[in-house]
Amino acid sequence: MRFNKKLVLIIAIFFVIHFILQFGFLFVASAAVMQSFDNPDDENLKTKSEIYFVGDTVLSFPLLFILDRMTFLVYALPGFLGYIPFILNSGLWSLVFYFLIRKKFEKQVY
Image 1 (cartoon, rainbow, N blue to C red):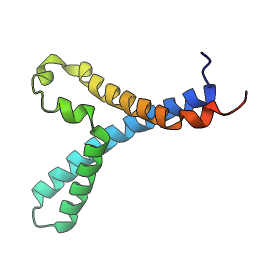
Image 2: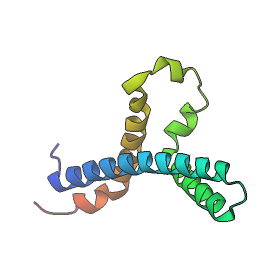
Image 3: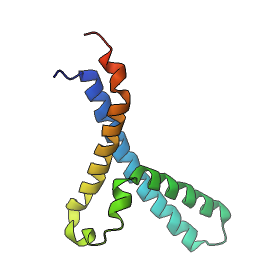
Image 4: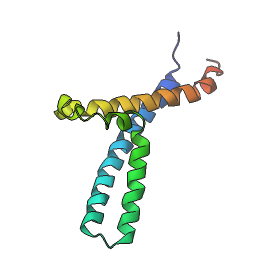
């Protein structure tokens, strides 16, 4: 089986972008929620925190959404091992993206 180098590069770039966006939305959503907690009367902050939280929820779906219900993993994956679910989630998104775009690259002649 031959791998299309262009397709592999696109999937790798998608993986990195998803991983960075996933952490970015997590940090920004946490900061926005803290700001809205400190200023409960500011509707603008509430709206921003809800938007960032929805973005984080979408990017974290499905793996982190499921793992969030398993509280024992907080103790099972201490320190840097806690990044493993994020890596697996980005890998899952990349796999789905691969299956969505592979037909386009299979038709190309080398």
